Image (tube, rainbow, N blue to C red; front, side):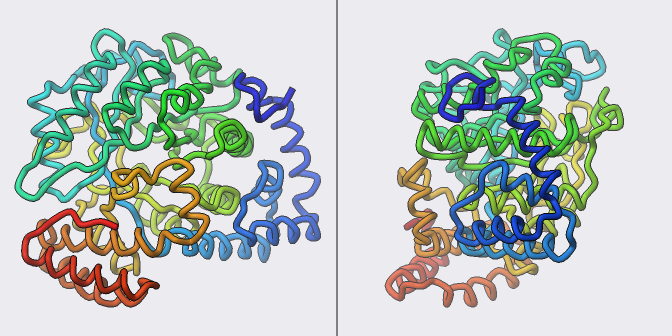
Length: 471
């Protein structure tokens, strides 16, 4: 029985409720009166239910789809402005005891060399990332309690935060590791992590069990209830995501929003981020084996529907997607992108991009500097800001700031100051020229005069070599 306040996975992600939702969406996908009501509700910026959003996703009336896209772009601007947060993944280990059918790290794959970074190797990877200009990482590992226990992850986090190279510093470490215990989540919180990210892969229980035949990840309920344990362990910023292409996308979309509703109902705060990865080619993995793949147009429509359904949530798109798709998605709600990513263990210290230990094929192979310049030329501010996390503005504190529209008075100037750091320390001359012009123009968009004047003063001090100002 569907119950968003339940702590049991099969009650807050109720199979029958999803089937009923899909049937309701099919019945109403041409119901213009209802679609207009839903779009008007979305314009209030308070979000939509999984049923309402599913109607918009099913709707194929061209002018209504265009209304949806226009609204998604406006909502993104209202809450996040024209800032795009930049991050990079850091793969620590590809040892894994699971048998996931869509991942090259699966235990039976003998082609892939198994590797785990030592702390000295972690340090070299971090310095390589700092030398690009990164300030925010998402660490990734396979699941292996012997080769990659929680103590190893904690040691790596400590190492990452301890490294100061030239003007470089990693100021926020997000963690994407397997579902674990409340006690282990407490340890991660104490280690100073930012967001805990865990992709559901698929909310369809039967498909989930087929795709995860062996290993600890095969337990659907334990995996699906992980975010509740993370929040019980004190982590108030959590990130959801499904791997689109494993199951029918409309089913996944409804499940994803039900999960967000559940977190809001139980913990008073929804997901900090939602990621939208699609199944990609990788060693021993052929995406064509999964017959639920979605085309670019459908994928972009999903992004727009998520944005209007959960207006305050950050949306992440990785280098799985190519430049063209990422560019269009930026207009439909994406607020975080990775740049210069390597999805292999130890990949950042290699001169040539290694492919033998990649978790998936990267479609956007540009350098971080190329991504930064591209974003600025599109009129976006690449942001390396980590201030909210370091000032304790997480969970409901962040959401209340976001809902009150106050982000423009702290995140906007913080984005300009961290961009200035990047331009001074890492940018190519052409990128720097574009960036300096952008900063001068964007200073005028800071609403409060006092904040604007302080920001200008900080920018001058960054010119003089001082770093790490924040509101």
